[in-house]
Amino acid sequence: MRHLVVTLVACFGACFCHNEGLKITLPQGVLQGHTKVTKEGNEFLAFEGIPYAEPPVGEQRFQEAKPPKPWKGIWQAKTLYKCIQYDHILIPAGQDRVSGDEDCLYVNIYTPDANPPRKYDVLVYIHGGAFVFGNGGMYGPSRILDRPIVYVNFNYRLGPMGFLSTEDDILPGNLGLKDQQMALKWIKENIHHFGGNPDSITIMGTSAGGASVELHYIMPKSKGLFNRGISQSGCSLYSWVLVEKPLEKTKKIAELVGCDTRDNKDMVECLKSKPARQIAYTVGKLQVIYYVYLVRSL
Picture 1 (cartoon, rainbow, N blue to C red):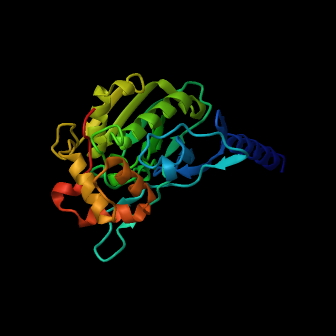
Picture 2: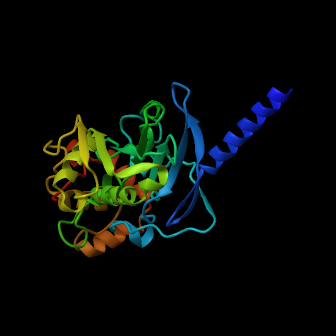
Picture 3: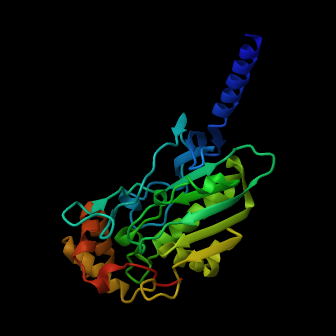
């Protein structure tokens, strides 16, 4: 009986300490995480759906994202989000191919221990999907967290919401890549709260994510936000990465949703007034040459 009592006390003590690790205090406020288990049965901490920017909605649509505001109370970091998108590959024909939300700029962080004796290396995964579909949550932590590492993924604006351009200061373009930069900056500044080493960050991606990794190597504002990069099946020089005639494509989308295209400023204001789902649906109505709304310039 004495042995049984000692065992129970040890168990409850460990559980109490572990539950304390599920709450993390950031400059923005307090996070409440949860636990998950790897394929090999190892438990780890998960913080899903942490805002790294203000929601890009309303007047903030087609604008560079702003840093997130502090929140009151405890943020329940237990939800995976995805940006609004038209998915022509993963969703079968006949089903609604538009899904996701315009409020989608969130980061997901997974760590074996938020307070390790020695900070872990950090792996940040940038999701693929031709810059048109996909989400950070597609690439889960259930295998990588069998290793002593902090794993991070995030969302960025896609398709028309992230890559339209009027080829002038009204809508310069590349908002999705600028979202990535803001996410990387947030990670650099906050990852130590999750047991990660801010001086050992590797960015990695597949397809559009791989192309993004290469682009961050040459984008001046990405300097200092990471230490290493791994690009898989994606190259910054692929034809589908560098868009041609972006204004022409923006006008095509505007016409499809009923906006006048004679003046760029008025056209963008009209696009801001349209439902996000209506804009996303235009992707399915365009020819292949219009399909990808990608990087215009650096």
